[in-house]
Length: 154
Image (cartoon, rainbow, N blue to C red; front, top):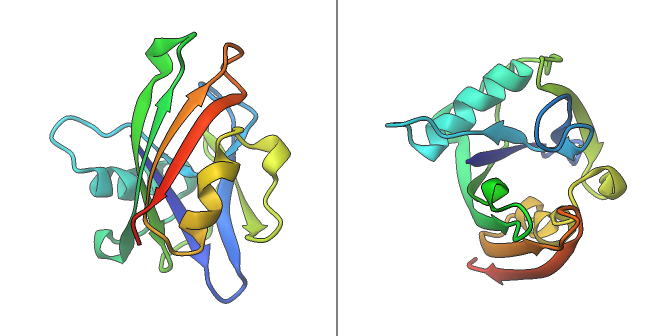
């Protein structure tokens, strides 16, 4: 899995999107998704950003921001390891797709109550430019974080 956070440095905004279907439907999330067979996570982030929001990001414009391991003991099929990227350069105006309704948000006013509970543990560090290694375990309700650990690598 991969996640990409497109950051407008000048306006201090980040591109997120309201998930329209599937896991996390109704929540505000970063762009991203599955890494295909024989595809690098960086290339998947580029592909997903275009598929989900018509935003073109060049692979060399991405910065690796680390990894997050998500564990759902009550629903192990949801477990995933995610490569996280940021980008400060892109082409295109975000467009609604079947998966995402893109939204720009001020980085100091993120819609935490509309996001997955885990984001508050690690996303501020990523948006501040740090590289992280995080692990998140969800409670029985598959929505609330029961344990989160974030290691700053840079």
